[in-house]
Amino acid sequence: MIDATSYCTLSAYSTEKKLPKEFLIGLGITEISHYGQPALQIPYYNDSGIVQAIRLRTALKKAGPKSKCFCWEVGGQPCLYGLPQRRPDKIVALVEGESDTHTLLLRSINVLGIPGASCWNEERDARHLLPYETIYVVKEPDAGGGALLKTLSKSRLRQRIRVVRLEGFKDVSEMHVDNPERFDERWQAALDASVPLDEPSPEGIGTPQAPVCPFEMTEDGLFVEIQHQKGVERRWLSAPFEVCGRCRDPNSNGWGHLLRFNDDDGCLHEYVVTDAALHSDAGALCSDLASQGLRITTTKNRSRFVTYLNEVRVPARVTRLRETGWQIVKGELTFVHPFGPLGGPTGEIIRFEGAATSAYEQSGSLDDWKATIGVLVGQHSRLRLACSVAFAGPLLYLGGLEGGGLHLHGDSTSGKTTAASAAASVWGKGSTDGLCPSLAAHGKRS
Figure (tube, rainbow, N blue to C red):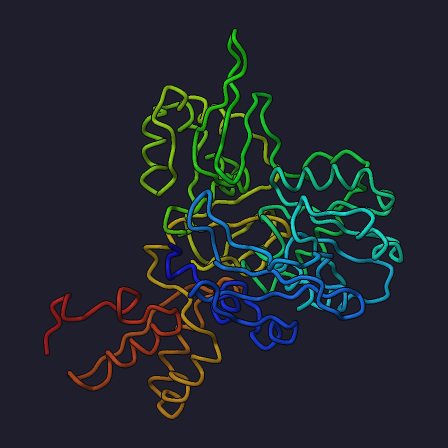
């Protein structure tokens, strides 16, 4: 049975992928009931606008290693996705799946989608791409992505293909969801760094390179092939995870790898495995990962799991920061907020450690704040002053000014707490567990 949180309604998909509901409806996507559960019906049209096949998305995420999110309606003839929307142009992007195609269509980027990495059909598909001078193929960092490139290397289109790798992200949709405002910038940077299909990847560009040892990451997890006198034995080491990048602090210390994985409830976790931990107690490291929800073998092969982490090579770089505010990251001024960086070098992944316990966070948007708190404080000079002080903090560094404080003095019930709460609302958490803790807890006296 599918967990209710995994049901794929149109609203849930719209929210999960950060795609407008009306936009999806305009592509012909509808919500239906599939064996009593909500699912999305995604039509595949040919270039004449006639439905060739219908794919059903039955879940937002996989409920387990062997679960499925998609199925085809019987009798269909799958084709490239997005044929009616393609435009005459010199370039086109080729991606895997519908959600990546939806993302690029939303951005008015010329795109066609392959139903899956193993679904390329030369006779059926290549003719639709012949009019284009350059075909940007987005390679996903898994076995399927490698298999797709191998198939395309035999295509008549191969000399037109440039391989695009999205450093730090699995696919186009994930990069969009991470930060829609920075998507265009990141997408262009990825195109600029693309390489011809028949050209080896230069240093610093590409997906994680597997160690020399025979490891393989699949949808069912990490496996290793162990050579014996009687042959090769394949053993499971862990549930699947992604090595997002090689991480360190701004001073190039504290090196490690940033891992990302889903637990059995589908909750996303990020965990930094330091290089120091790889040379310490393997049991303690695996225990910490297991407590976050990553299933790892308890057999003697656990040491091979650690070997994989030690030998895997990842070109993407992650900067780990322990303080918020203005920081210099790779020579560029960056404002670090618990929900993510504002600005910063292109292609660098920035992670603030301590977001879960931070006294402030993002809650809504600036327009939301204006429509609620802003309109209430607008007519009160003291409340305007308190909020102005809250907004002024990040500007001090840019102006080369020293910090200071504002002391509100007055009798009880004169509005001091209200002013402090309004100021704290600028930074999200307000008076809950944020910058304006309960005064009663601090022994306030009348």
